[in-house]
Length: 426
Image (cartoon, rainbow, N blue to C red):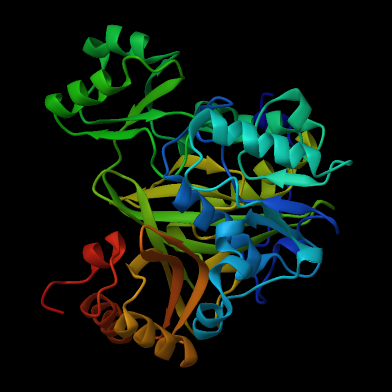
């Protein structure tokens, strides 16, 4: 699969954000089952070190944005039956009927890890369908699994692999690539050739897994030593001194129509891991050129390969206003649901937080903000005596946002994002 840039039919794209909220049903045929899931560990050429209980929380995001015709696939731990009526009513948890969804049984719990988890998931999913109706965000590559997939898993995995970015986007939109190593051993052997600063990344991963920002020689040595035994492709790219980190979220219908679902400003940890984001109400001017290419050239190309659905290209913008695509996500992302469920006139801040399961103060404050329309819980589960949740905070000004975050922190909510963006003195 190679993109020959001068031979692809270019469409004149509409670069306006969608005026109305979309759902997964706008992009997939009626009767599709969508599983926002990933292989665990190192499986199907993909690195995923996210803990299972967070994976289960993430998968439930599709419930809120599935629409009328797409059936979400999610874990029993996030189901209304498991959570209980009281907490679902208190936090206004969105639920769907069993006839319009597929619940992964409780025996595949967060206690099931590694290879056993992957094999159990594959067995359950392949036995649940007689036709090609399943779409998995990052699918398994087994031949038997592909028989139930609406989209060829090999196409999705190829598009999601960072090593193929130069095959789908012109080099003027990409950071310079210093090295593409076939494994950690080759990376170790060529360490003397690498420039500092740089970014080392496992090419098939998500949410910042396997990404190392190297601003010093000690950073570089640490990253190379951690990856030395890894038998996966590793890229070493130019470090971009970014002033903005955006995600351009797009939808490509199974009939070929494309739309810009929205743009978010991504918030990452100091290590480059995704921890949340804020929706924007318009496309930033510095994103216009790359947005035109994505909508007018890239999406027609990937549609010709047989891919459709919802996805995102992560883009860094440097101090000179130049855009660099750094990560392809031809699947739902951490900001998809927030963008699909925007409130008119409001900005949305999406992130994961947790609180003690017996903290009435925490839950009462959260319930108050939910009733006022300032917060929506997208997904909820319980693990190690804590409620874990993906929430969206809706706000019209920074003072309201800071007030809400400060109060959540005071009553005991824990969140890496809140710690990062809320001043200690706020």
